[in-house]
Image (tube, rainbow, N blue to C red; front, side):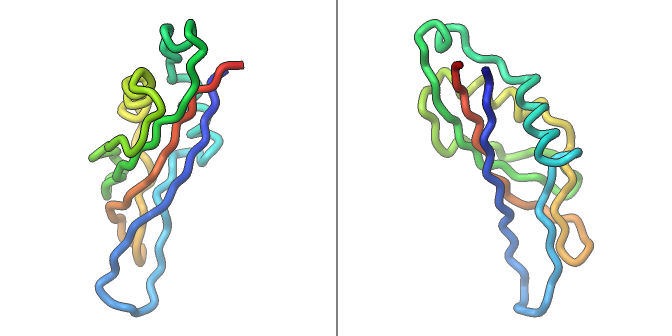
Length: 119
């Protein structure tokens, strides 16, 4: 069984301390759609499954002004065998809904954790 746990945050550096409205980037259809996408596309490594290995891969990535994932970086990984399958899922993602600052689309950071768990 594949399980997804994800954390997401947005980094914005406004030029002033004036009031501003911001929204975080979001996956089309919301968090449930993100979980479904990952569940449908994530491939559990055969060797890891045979050896009963479980673990997480934590990523930092950016969603650009057009919703494209970019600058994907692994922050932490419990086992290198999970890195490529998790990275492939992120690279296959459709465009996200970009973050907005005062109604204008902006680039923003997202932290995402993909968990590999056996039942």
